[in-house]
Structure formats: C-alpha cells, structure tokens
Length: 639
Ligand code: MIC
Ligand code: SF4
Image (cartoon, rainbow, N blue to C red; front, side, top):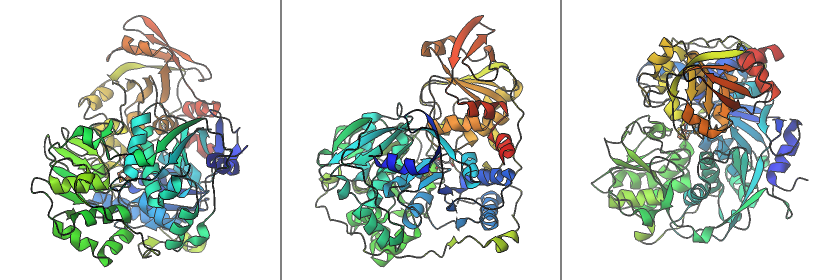
C-alpha cells in the first residue's frame, strides 16, 4: 500500500530492503547538495573513491558558511570547491549567492525526488515535496559515486493541519508548536508528513520553514505534499516543468497522527538553550533584549524579509538594541531592492549582512557578554552564537521585528495592523552566480586546485576484536555536535585540516579534552540520551577518531551522528540498562570485546572490577564498515 507521500516516493526509490518501519532500506538518490563547511571533506572523500564524474541526476555545491575570509583558509576552500565542481560535473553556487537550502528550494528542488545533503537542514526541500535528508559528507560522497543511501524505513507520523494562521502568526510558530509537543529527542526514525486542509494555506517557503526546523526534532525528515501551491511556486521560479503532483491518498494510514489547528497557534518562542523549550511569547513576557538577528535557512525568504520591512517601514529600531539581517539569497535581495523594502530596512537602522549563514553559525554578529539575542534561526545551543554566556531565543520574523522596534521581547499582535504580503507571480531569475556542470571533455581538462589549507585525508586501521582504553569524558543528555566539534569564525576555517581542528574537540565542555586524548592515546566517550543532536558535521566523528576515540557509549544517539560514527570507525554502543551510565566515571579503564560486532557486547571496567552489558543497532554492513576502519576503505573495495 502506498497511501502517504513518504510511501509513494520511497516505493519509487527503494532498491534493496523491505518497506517496513525499522528495517534497513537502500534508497536511490537523485540529487545531492553540499555546503563549504562540510563540502571540502566530502569532495576529498569523493576523490578518494575514484569515480570520474558524479552519477546523480544532478548535484550542487554551495558556499555559504565560511564566507568571512579572515585569511587564505576559506578562500582556499572556495577555489578547491569550484575546481572540484568543474572537474566532476557539479553545479557550483559561488559565495555571495545565498544560503544553500534557500537556493536549492528556489532553483533546484524537485517534487518526488530524493535528496541527501551534507547539512542537517537539507529537509528544507521537503517543503517542495522532495524526500530530503541530512547526511554526513562521506555518505554524500558515496551517493555522488552512485551508491544508494541506507536508512531505517521510517515510521510515518502524519501532522494534520486544519484552520488558517491568524495575522502576525507564521510558519515558524507552527514548527515551534510542533517542537513544543514532540521535543528534540525521541523522534529518531520518524518522518513528519504534513496533510489536511490547512496545508493549502501555506506557501512553499512557509512549508520549507517548517520542514527546515523539523530537523530539530531529530526525525529523518519532514515533508509536505506537492500540490497547486507547489505548481504556482515552481512556475513563478520559471521551473513549471519540474512540477509533479504528489498528494496522499484519502485512505492513507499514518503510524501516528498529530492534529494542529493553525487558527489556534499564537506567536511562540524557544527559550535558551534548546529549540525544544518552547512557550508562547505572551507567557515569557517583555524581557530585555540586546540583539535581534533575522535570517538563516529557516527564515530568510522573500516573504519573511518583506514582513520585517513592512513592520519597520518609516520607524527606527529601539536604541536599546542592535539588529542584523542576513537575506537568504540574491533573488530575495533583488526583490527587496526593486520593491523598495531594502531602503526601508536600511532607514530603520538595521545592519544588513551578506546573503549567507553568518550569525547562525557564529560567523560574526556574536552578542555581547551575558546578553539576550532574539533570533529567527533554528538552533540556540549554548555558545553557538559565539558568546558563551549569551541567551538565545528563537522566534518568527514577525516577533523578531516587533522586538527590534520595542527593545523587549514583543508579541507582534501588540504592534498594530497586519499588512498582508503578496509573493510575486514571477520571481526575478538571475543564475549568473551558478556555474553549470562542464561537459565530460571539458571536465577532463580541469585541474583541481589545492591551497595549503587543504590537507590530505587521515587514514585509519581496521578495528581489533577488543577495544581498550580509559574514559576520556563523561557527558550529559542532549550533547550537540556543537559541543563535540564547535563551529564559529575561529574554528570553521579548519574544516579541511583534521589535525588542526581536532584540537578543539569538546573545547567548551572540557578544555583539557585534547590533552587527555593525546596523553591516553585515545579512549572512550560516555554520554546520555540524544548524543550528537544537531548538525551533520562529520568532523564531530572524524576529529575524535583522529584523537583515538574507540567507542562512544551512551543512552541513545541522534541519527546523523550515529551514521557518522560508523562511517569513521568509532563503535557506537548503548547501555542495555540506562542506569549503568551512573557506574562509569572519567578515568575508568575499560575493555570492550566487540568481536565481529554480530552480537551485543560486554564492557569490563577494570578500575571498578564491574561488568556492564551493552547493545547496538548495527546492521551486518555497518559492522563490516566499522571493522574495516570506516566507510572509505570499505567503499573503495566495492568500486
Ligand atoms: C549547522 O547549522 O550547524 C551547520 C553548520 O549548517 C551544520 C553543518 C556544518 O557543521 O557544517 C549542519 O546543520 O549540518
Ligand atoms: Fe547555515 Fe544556519 Fe542553516 Fe546551518 S542552520 S545551514 S549554519 S543558516
């Protein structure tokens, strides 16, 4: 039976395995995307696989994260990426063109296609009816080489939308409401599929805001139907020919249904430091705010920034705070300029930044010490803004703009009349910063340019049958990849230099981690629930591996990080009895007999003289990959 849109799309893409929740399936991948911060590593891996040209229908390489260029490093990466794209048949979007997910939605995403991207917010394209998933760079490299992508066939959660959003309430409030209900953990292996009469009241960019931040629930992806609204959006992007209708059957069966009446949603806010700590803006009250930041792949579409410009038009932002705006793409900027919104924004006193990730990943605009920053982004993890003690609140563009005017967190319903935003019937199309794939003959002539920031890939040995070492660190629940491998302007430039970036592993949690890992010749990481939530950065596995981490033993894992650990030969294990977490301490000397990983294993704590039962969810192939020392040596053998 294929009644849901997830079932319909997956049925057309499964090349191995059974369509049964929890069982592993191999999916044909139509498209891939990368961004620069994960892309350099992904393409080094693609080169190492040894394929002459990408095998997907099309693949796109974007540059949007590391655009600060304080020295040669980021610029080296950009040139490497451009030359790689030309050499291997990819589209290349130049720095300054915009944020990968916004651009992919505007210019590339196709309903019914499968997409994986080396960025956790790849599900943004689910707003267009693509089945789009975040993945580690190595998995994206393998998909570009023509290999299928393996996932556990998902549980399909239907989110039934009824009603219509009230003025001053927007898509961001919808996804914040979803997060309020389902939180950031416990959703691994689920797809959130939106259906019901409320769907047609949301535009494609609105839907994309929802699927984008769906990532924060930890699900495999989120997806909307492809309907008349999708067709109109594609036509306005001059891509009508990419349309394919994909709607659920009336008798579609969902594993679980969540009902949301859009008419009842109010302006919402996620409190520091979790996107799942959601309350109504009214409940939180008029707290003092020092900074407002508007943009990111969640809320930087034309509609979102026009709302902001309408609110700020003819007014001045509060003198008590600073406001930054980073538009999602040049298309957005061109419209804002032509329609007069840009000047309204500038006159109001906001600071307009580049069309890039910017503040969202700590590339500038860090808030002042111990201050409050209200942002339209999707993540408010501690320290991610670049300021350790800043408190980041996540809101809609309406709430952000109202807050910018008032200087305190403000429910936008308190600022006056709402002006409806109409999207253009045809967007301004200007693809002159997208370099098209070269022909096979031309591509052969291209030399890949490697500046000094592009370091060779480290290589790793096959795993022994017993892992021995000390506990290097013991951490709590909900550790994010930002804790494990921080980003920001200081560290991101080392994304193509593993020896250097590994010095920053767990920096904010334990500044001595690097030293301890070195002195102990590697060891074990112990963690709680939802370990590795957040980004897709494989550096959060690769850098610990480089430091000799052998296994990560936790109560539960986030999906993408779990896959990344396997890809780089770190054994991901969970406690059979979660209380056993309490029986381990930093410094304990452990032995874990893993054998061929076909069975669960036992941990011997030599320091305490105790034994702990561990389990894993590894498939036979995962076990082989791990034993081989990671996916790269393993896949090279397959080709
Ligand atoms: C993020 O939002 O954390 C990032 C930066 O986009 C990451 C990717 C990365 O770390 O490069 C993500 O979400 O996957
Ligand atoms: Fe960029 Fe932020 Fe989106 Fe990540 S979440 S892709 S850093 S804008």
